[in-house]
Length: 537
Image (cartoon, rainbow, N blue to C red):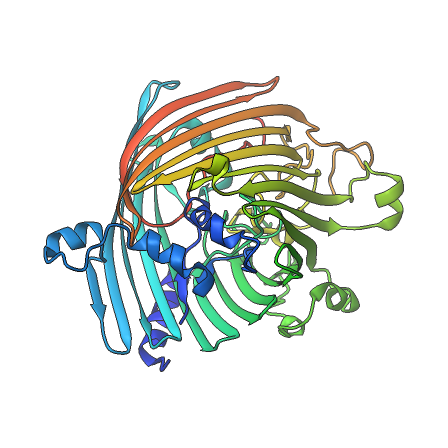
């Protein structure tokens, strides 16, 4: 907690001393899909694969339409404006702005499968603003209490984390009730139009899909420092991050903090074709023998790709490389994909496809806007495949994770997934539907079949003959639907009715969840509930 408050203090101090911002929009898939028509138009070259966006002139018309829907400058009723159109505190000076909002997030539900109630009681606060057109800052924090369905409670017990949020503890002697805090903070400075400097505690997403096999917004927020250069058709990001991983254990009970450095280059070859190149390195602050590693200054150069440096150093660190691509088939239909390579041995990669160290994943998808010529009816269809043992390492502290959760796909490894999403917005109404099918293999006890990335890949169930969904072969079906009415778009205050139907079935168990929820929600944070188990239970 001390680090959290320190990062918030740094943001606020920086905000106070800055002299001289792009419009920053926190990322969630449900909100960003509203940009589809403009972002994926053949008439534009928006860099869509690096999120959060800094909304520029190409997307500003859509952004203003969303954030100012229904506002009437002539309306003098301050209560109406504060409820439906403005921040609760909204100050606009000659050279700066400041806003603040109380963020309620309350939800009640009924889990019919388990015959008990679920609920979320969360209250948050955000402050933010700009100085000149160069500096932006935002700090938000939530105090949360919740009673969750069994499958999420099982996840929390196994991982220790409320999915994508924070470490949690039970309360009121209820094994399915949890309490946690959630805090984000960013300060963003754009000294010149082609360079942005951002620091804080938050998440980054790379890709054009719902999932990312490279870097997603799933794991809980982490401290970072990021440089982003925008040179027309090329956008380049370099980011340095610091993670905690108490899920990693050691007989010496040493600190499990670790570092990460990430590079991504997105090249818009034309109005239709984009190609991206990605790499990252993860290393422990202290190794399993208690030796201090600390920050590795050989990774400080922001304009290099790291795999050659990591190899040249004879480094024991964990490197991951990847590719992204998208092609706009028509004005509104875009095909996209990703490839993540965790380990490569050419001899086995091509001649022995079942070898344990063939660790990679790939994604293929299509997304589009205005389906059947219906404005704001947006869709996505995506397939993800990750081989067993991908993202795992010889030591837990080196695996591809942050705060005990995967940095990439939330299911870890050893799976196939097909996910379809449909979104429609009409005036202040938002409609969302999701279908997700998963086919994966769970670990059995301490036997490592390759799904849990916190297991060492040096202890596989076998070196050869590995296949996707080995272990306890499991099938999951997840259906979700939501209807929302946006009360105030400035901080996404909305009434929301939702339903979930989920089945997870294998030879060891057959679990079903069917539930309805209703609540008053706010904020743009993405909350994932389409989760898969990691091991038999």
